[in-house]
Length: 80
Image (cartoon, rainbow, N blue to C red; front, side, top):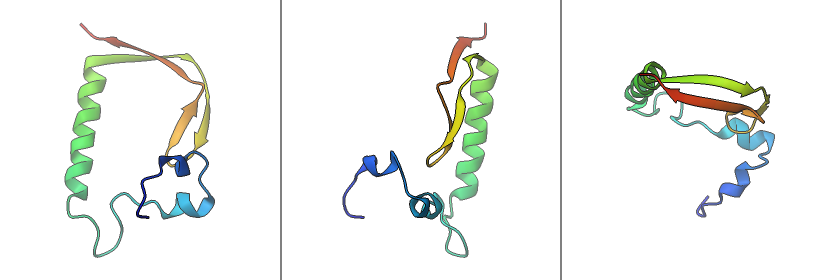
């Protein structure tokens, strides 16, 4: 825990995936959780209104820490 090793998330164990909690849980959870979630919603809304996203090649979803598409190619174009 005292050493930053991003390689441990390349192929995480089941225990590692289940222990990652960005904001913690329970009574002692992060006080800024709601603010952070509101901010990310605003950012996503702004990006989606200014850019057009198209899936060029479909991939397969894989789960590491987050659900992400592997092999998916997306083109992005700014909306005029």
